[in-house]
Image (cartoon, rainbow, N blue to C red; front, side):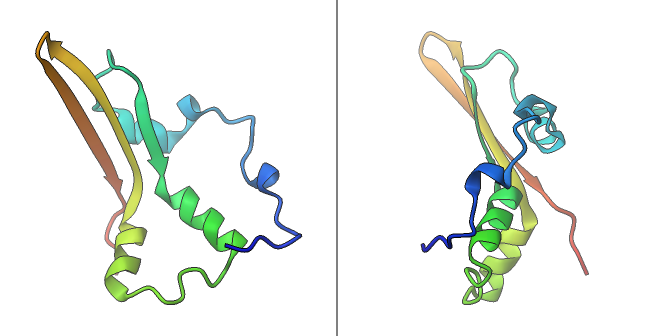
Length: 101
């Protein structure tokens, strides 16, 4: 991927907004166990928007199904907990956007 001279990744996100305050993070992690080993979180919408800002034609060659998949997933979160001495439970949440006609 080529970065233009005008691309400034430092200014692409606001440092004043914490992840814990993010509505998308709260939505995606709301039903995950709270007593866990931490979260793996991926905000797909923000990532796609950032990639388009960097390279507006990055998704030009996508097939229709892949484009619809990227448009339907808002974020993904996962965590794990130990349920007993021999079992680890992994939970994954996928936040989806409503169908657009």
